[in-house]
Length: 132
Image (cartoon, rainbow, N blue to C red; front, side, top):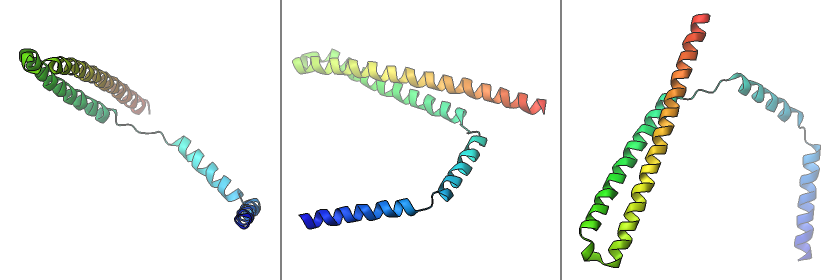
């Protein structure tokens, strides 16, 4: 046990000595170069593509909600077949319909937001090109 502890302490000491003697100037210079270039690059975001993705997601979620509404209607029509389990299934189907409709609304809101940002970005780009 003591032999393992001595090896561990020796390894940690060696690593500490190597880290203390190493040059960090090259790493810091490289870090400064990358941070300066990162500040100069304006990130490009495809808001039109994101809006389409969110619209497709909203459409898909509404389709899933419609399937669960069909299932809910079936449970309501045939509730006599399932007894207590049918009531649980109805409650679950109602919860799923509400969940998917809420998610679809959020996706539609996100799509609208990205559409607006895209239009503003296009307008700003056109204005900046016209002023130059």
